Length: 255
Length: 218
Image (cartoon, rainbow over all chains, first blue to last red; front, side, top):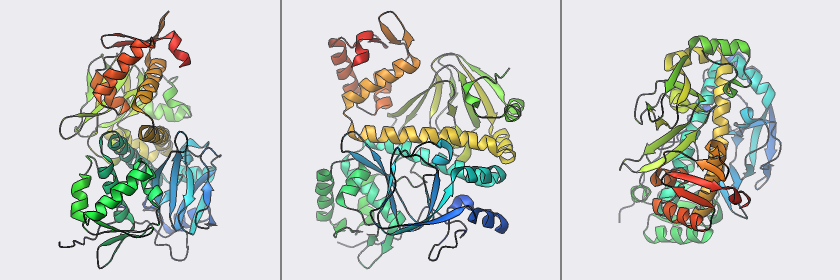
């Protein structure tokens, strides 16, 4: 069986490098179009923060005072369901915003954020950023567009959870992860995000047992290869066939 | 005449409301009329002042997959307007409805000059995002029967009419539409509704559902 290798394009163009953090490729695209002096003004609002792997940045329900821009590392945003059930809403990587909805909701965090690996970020206070937004409508416009895209993405996910089977949901998550965090290798496309089987189950909204069983089935069909916390996609076309693209494929990160 | 007292404009200064008032158009939609259809080019931002609207969408095979009910204070078409994408849903008035409409051009013009308007729209969308995320977790892990029962309580509370015996849901919603609203199969809707009726939680009168007072403690 021929192994297909396809380089997937990351969906999120990077914005200007404002934070000045070493190794950071650029901040969110919502900051595109800012002049150098505006970027400097924004930089003054940013406070550097660092977290170890598996560290909680904020808890669901805790008061929210602002948002974060991730410079390095990866963070999972998790919402608690009833009992011990949890749903991973998205994985947030370098250049992306974390908790930006709090700029407008401004009360409590609607989900918990926990690092997947050592993470450096910039924290921006809500009131200071709101003041900045009022003086920079193009950033306000781009931020509103980002939230609008995320809304469309979560609407598609709601439909997916109701009407799609476990296999399609898991296949779609693997493809989306590869698009965001895929590294091309000899055999295929390796997902670099360090996710456990339980994490994948919580992203798909299925039980861990079902996730393990489905992943094993995908491996037996030589669509993927499983390694400890990593997964390599061997046959992207085959996986896409299983996933059957959703109408209105999300254009914002709602992994 | 656009009322400034509507909850819709909470948090906006009188000056900003005046800017919107000057550019906005007031629309009246009788029950059953279509405001826009899925696939239509986006034509601006709608704000519901009075009435009730259902938003529906079909998948490529023509199956109903999305239903949302919107009451006063909700925005329609904001995402499509900001992203300049075609309407993702069809919006139909379930009751006589009054809306404020800002054309795409007017919305963009005001938005580029008045960041407050954008922040106001973004605030609405951020609240909606939080509701969607909560619904996602609920949909993934809560049983169909429980979700439908919770939806009945929610719709009765938000859009129902108080009667002596309970809250009456007098909306023109088919079983398929209840199914898409909750994200379950239409057969499950029929089964659960009949079970609830047998248990004395609801009474079914065609498409009208009476949530009995005794059900409140369930």
